[in-house]
Image (cartoon, rainbow, N blue to C red; front, side, top):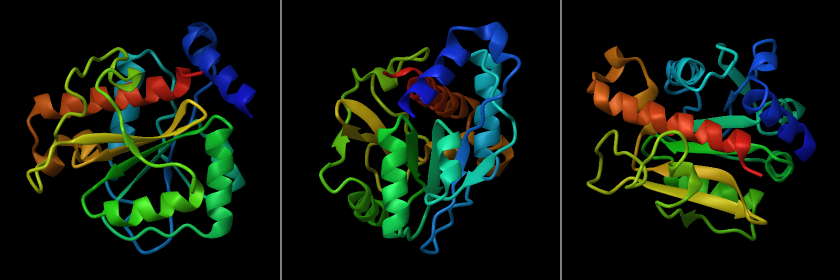
Length: 219
């Protein structure tokens, strides 16, 4: 499975002519527990459009939805998760998600305010041996095409806390990136939804593009 994801990366970044003939799909995670996994409906489509235009990618423009226990999870090298409320992974879902991540998949979790206390507990089901660690600003995820010398951009204000980027690192590889106190996905939304300044939207989209680039190219 790691070889599969590596070949996808080669297809996207080393052979741009071939990449035009095959659209790669990314997905949003549909989880149980009652939280609004479906939040930010325009976010991923806008990020996909931004990446196709600015990174010369050929991502499928349709937002896909996948469940953590589904075998279809392995069809997506990048999966995005968001919401405000409760999250519950069954044991089978946690095991499938773990297998996906250690096989080369990548999960971006975006706390849409209120997710934190739930997702930290559920991640322990997936990787009981790992702890979320704050990534240094020198980490490659902040230094792809777009440079973020101060780490995650702050898109929306809630509690007066700084935006933080946490990660789960398995055998030296970042498998989960968790954006906290940031509202990154809100910044990907149509401007009419939040009326954010265009500068904020561009910061959010550029950081999202960095995440996708990193997920597709890390070893």
